[in-house]
Length: 195
Image 1 (cartoon, helix red, strand yellow):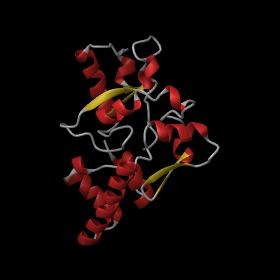
Image 2: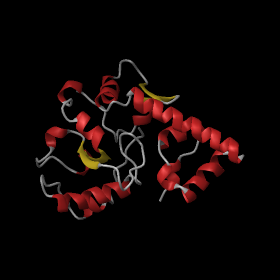
Image 3: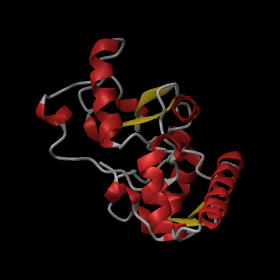
Image 4: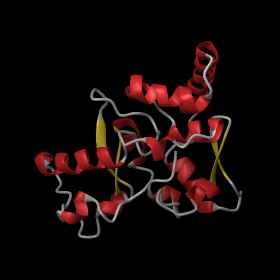
């Protein structure tokens, strides 16, 4: 997972959009904006959200959903599975690090496909890892295999990482995932390159 960004220029803020429980038309507009702002990636898994993926607006603090305090900074577009698995565990994992924390990537470390709290004393980071299942073995293994496959493809194409990922962006954008892993493993911040 990478640090999440919220823009003061968001159309959600400009249009003063509010999430309305059971109003799919209204909420679809919010989801569409979030998808664009997240450059097509799940805020939690860092996987590309294809047209066929079940995706939902995730209320990071679910206790705010349907209240006046629920707002843009609490909303992320995520894969449905991760939203449903998190929803009942909120109270159990408090306090929790917010995905937009300015020091997010210093507090939650990526290393060889896994995520760790930089400090064993950082309860917020530890709780976020547990809450969002960032340490899920199946997801970590999927990330590791993805990175290994990209290394093999670079070797097969005889391309350096920068050239390889720029070509991948041009040719096969929907098969791009794990932007933080790519940044950490190959030194390329694709987030800055994506439109």
